[in-house]
Length: 84
Image 1 (cartoon, rainbow, N blue to C red):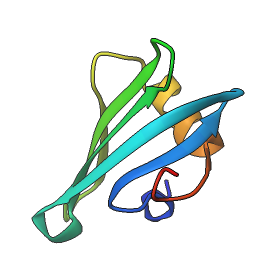
Image 2: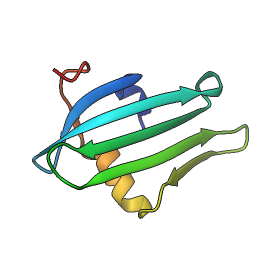
Image 3: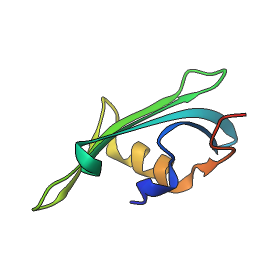
Image 4: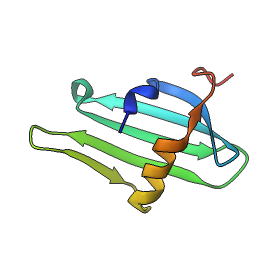
C-alpha cells in the first residue's frame, strides 16, 4: 500500500463521491503511522494504524473490517493537501 501519497498532517480527498478530511501522523522514523479520515458533513470514517517491522508489515484497522480500509486507501483521490 502506498501511504506516501498521503501528506503528513491534514489533507482532503474524495471517496465514493464524498469528501473526507484525512489526518496522517508518522511515528518511529517512518516505521509506523496512524491514518484517520472523516466524512465531512457525514458520519463515515476510516481509522487505522500501520506498522513496518523487520519481519513484516502490519495493517491494523481500528474497529472496522480491513477490506473497508484497503478499499479507501486504494480508491481515495486526494484534493489540495492543505484542505482548501
